[in-house]
Length: 257
Ligand code: 23J
Ligand code: MN
Image 1 (cartoon, rainbow, N blue to C red):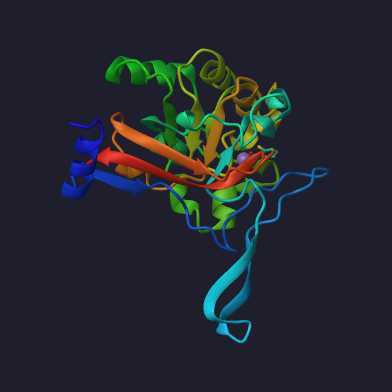
Image 2 (spheres, protein in one colour):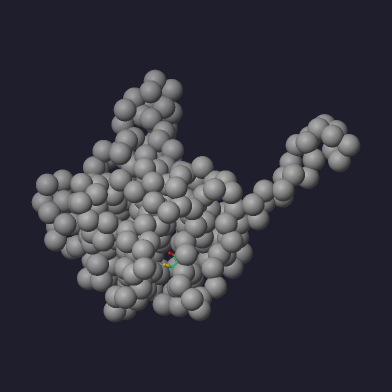
């Protein structure tokens, strides 16, 4: 039997399900707000070229404009200064875009404390319960933040002290990048770093360490609640933009039904 026959059969029979981890991309998709003096990204915009009218009687098409880091999106290593000599979107080894998904659920903790920080201890605890993390895997962190994704204010959760959203602490970011077998980190929030990570040393440690190690980020994920802790397979599909630092992406998971 060919290696993928069983998978095709399972998809047809429904014993393997495709879970769409992607948030809808529209003009109301929430976007990250960096503080002064940094430049911010434009959001998503769509402009009609023709819609079965005199501009094109038989067809409908649009022009879209979007920042690379908008909505459910992929962070390439070259996004960060620590990864400046590493991969852009077009040079990434596509094998790394598919891998076993490990889903750690910290939604209760993030609901109790929006500044909740994921630590190496949390990850060791997970490994003690579920076994060692897989080589080439993706760590997906469930925080319940996807429930806020249609409301920019609730999603960014900012006050006069800045944004308050969960993410890894400095040592966890360093460990994921330099010691773990993961190739990427996926989150439900606007970025892979915690809201307060601008004040960490180094600032934005997840970007700093992960991209410095040639690893990836995936943000604004949806439907992680539908995945098992282990046993799902992630497919991350960013655009293959030459010199691109990131791109809106379709993120899918194959999961046992
Ligand atoms: C630019 C500057 C800081 C951050 C980010 C972008 C992101 O989170 C991103 O989307 O990669 S923290
Ligand atoms: Mn990004």
